[in-house]
Image (cartoon, rainbow, N blue to C red; front, side, top):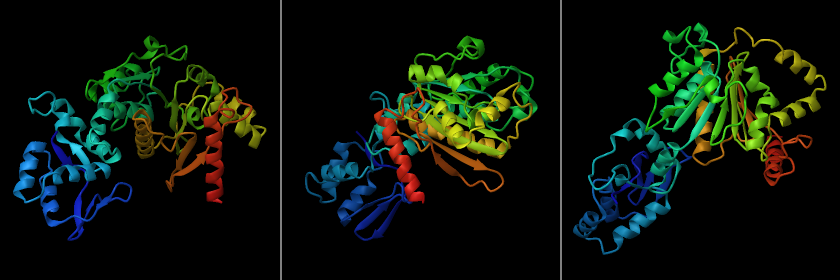
Length: 382
């Protein structure tokens, strides 16, 4: 082990015996008391020395035996310790060059997760994951590129038709793909941003696009329809196989200059598309009539999808997807985040499982907890 204080956290001394690691309240940690000798030893924890050499350095500083181990225990308990050797396979001491494009992502994970080697393990675990992105417009293509660049092992993109000029975007489908099949263009985009062994999964009909069936082995489905209506008011029919197979799915899109991220649906645990439709019908009895008209016919030919708004939605959706894939429950779990131009103020709505929905979330323990959380949030907001 080559112990080091997590380098992603900036260090500043609050006093002669008190040191703060990190700036932001979400992740800053204060270590106290710290005597002069311990402070000198802290400066040596930069990942260039193994524990044996550090013990020798501690003796040179006049520190008693066991002081290094006690300090490392304190740092580990505070979530400040990392192992610099984690990115060096075998005993060669050579840094894995494949990790270079993901160094910033690794640093971010090291801030989020307290254990010394958990960031590396989380990043490595992404390589075994398979995500399906359904829709390759401005939002979907960018989400696929971001997940690929973040090291997700297999990223599939399902869509039909050909790329239109207004669907291209920085970070998404480039201008030279206009007129190409969306599925093929999205596949190349995923490959271009592949990190750590990312693979572009099958696209189009090869991936079962037309039948909408659930597919085994999927870690997550991200629903990003080019017509944002499918994200703003999700259709329960395509989601049926995901509910049946227990496949988590996240909705994101832009409709009429309004962006949405969520809900992240955990089948049987949180509100699904059918729950949302039932809730909307309870609030507005004519809603089914409106939905039938909105969903009938061809998708809207030219969505009102501002480039900067689409980028913001794609970034947040990808971040929520990665948080879930890394084992956490992001704020979109059972909730929807919404933002509209021109003020761009994000607002959240908790979505409760509906008792009449056959998904069973309202009857399950997770559904009960989600409902309780929603009631608590509503009470606090009031």
